[in-house]
Image 1: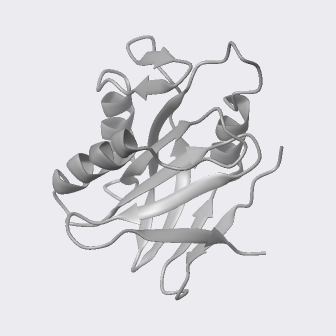
Image 2: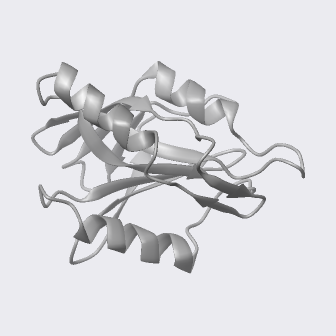
Length: 158
């Protein structure tokens, strides 16, 4: 499976680019068989005005809760990586958002996903929208979720 690396909001005001390594992480965790559990992590990268570059996607840790239809990210592990990248990059690499898988060809957010995204967005200290990625078997669903107002879906740039 090969996912697109470049995405944009419908109005093209926000551009998003995934590093090759972050896309490789997504592909490693696609739920192909019926026994595969959901997986996920955080997205780390840099902000360039309204544009985002995702440089790293963390992988599930032993503390995360995983089942066929649910992924619950625990802070342990992910936060330490985010803090380390922030420090070593002198504040240029930061927490951008969250990713997880769904056992669907073309994933759609559940009400639980939306509730969690709204909670995480409200906690942002920088007041930026949270980037959310759901990785399905054949496509990804990507949204920017602000702490208030409407989410914006991003579309692949072909």
